[in-house]
Image (cartoon, rainbow, N blue to C red):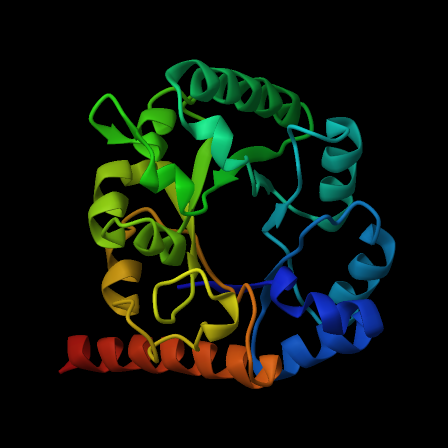
Length: 252
């Protein structure tokens, strides 16, 4: 399994010292990162990634509200091959008309991305799971409207906060899910209460196993009350230990 770190997790540290933050990420053991709003920092970020031997297979950018040409050009410069829109407001998930309009715009963005050799995806929050459209979650309804080349990055924590079982949702969404966000905590909207993987109420390993077409598992904290570098290190160590134990079990 490939594990990445969503750099939004480290936004405060990056604002103070971007090169030093990227160096720490590499020292912790990550080999991949997921940048956010990367257009403005593309050159400095690219230099830091190269210096520390890191790659960025995916990145977050507001595709439906900012200049797509700039986003895709910066993504290509950074080696990002999947650009994910990370946020469509809750009020846009309450009607079939709004969801259909969002899907159409994302499909159009995917066609533009293809001109750059870049795939497009979407990342959820809780409200796409709280809203019900024609007997299903709004996220499921949305997924069926997307062109085949558009992928999903399922934030498994927000699925649970939204009242759904992440394993069930991942199973229903199937091969559309190529990336997931891995986080843990008490399953509420208090982001500072989030915890390293394995320390909260999410069945993290079951969730990872349920994503059958997973390419990258992305560690993320929306916020954290402790030392954020220690938090991401604990999460990565937990995931790698589980992977190692699983491999040992197979050998046995």
